[in-house]
Length: 427
Image 1 (cartoon, rainbow, N blue to C red):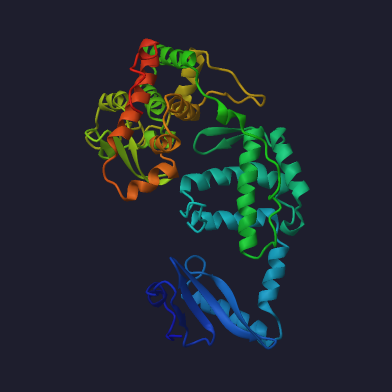
Image 2 (tube, rainbow, N blue to C red):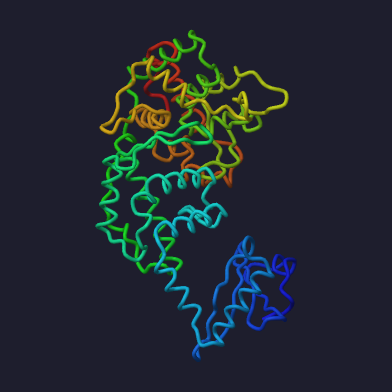
């Protein structure tokens, strides 16, 4: 193993898989695994060699603080202690609240990787933090990680579904947050808790994941889609809202969400350089599914083209105070009321949401006969974006598919009719 004084420059120069042992403290070292640099101590405890991890390079561990921790651990070994065993016992005695805090810190640092192999996005981590603070900690935060059983998790999920954690709280961003329960919230929170316990298993805090095997509620709101009549009603609601002087940017965002199947965050943060008008697409450098090239129909492109441009802001929908417009949910609430689409589920949530527009786009595409792969490409799912690393221009058939679906929705919105088409046209 190479040796040298461990300094900030030395450890940051390490390549993936390389280690460096310190020349000042015997057994103290650092190694890089992919992007992360970890400090460790190699020593012998009761005749057996041990590698004790100190922590990752960065706050709170610098070369100096890690070296001091290494001296502390080596001193414990000299006195006959087993630092690794002590740490294991400490972890086993940690609470769910402690575990959540550790998970959140790692997620915030980009160290939590999703199933698709990408670090969790900061927007997702922010949502995770809300579920941790509003549901997990109040119900089971004080419980020991090692003591939780599958029955406890089932009870935890049922309590959220029954509204046990519902409340209204003040927030810095919006003024207040209405925290509700419901089956959808319960299911998504248990999903997060499963990820947190899998993290605990990975780090030796627990041997098993108690969330495995828990039967979750089905999130019925995800099945909601707009019927032809409801598309017409939504279009009329948008027109009335426009006549009433509601924010035109918010109304345009809703229209383009409906006619593209894009996510709210993708449209609200859309920038002019992303648009490829000639290619009939939007090139997102980063989305929930990574880099994505998305086909966009002419009807949606016309909405984009109608937006006024600002000299110092390249956002398609610029905000009044920030770079991007972010008031769409409030506008959607008003439009939903004007359209009469105010039905709710058993827990008080509106069934028709901005995300419903995405589901409706996919359902309409399915009814028009397009394949799962084509629909996935139009929605930007991983199945549809995986080939984007190899191509620079979308297939003409894919652009035509997006154009056809958006034209149908535009027909509902503006004329209240199903566009007449040649049913023998190619899909």
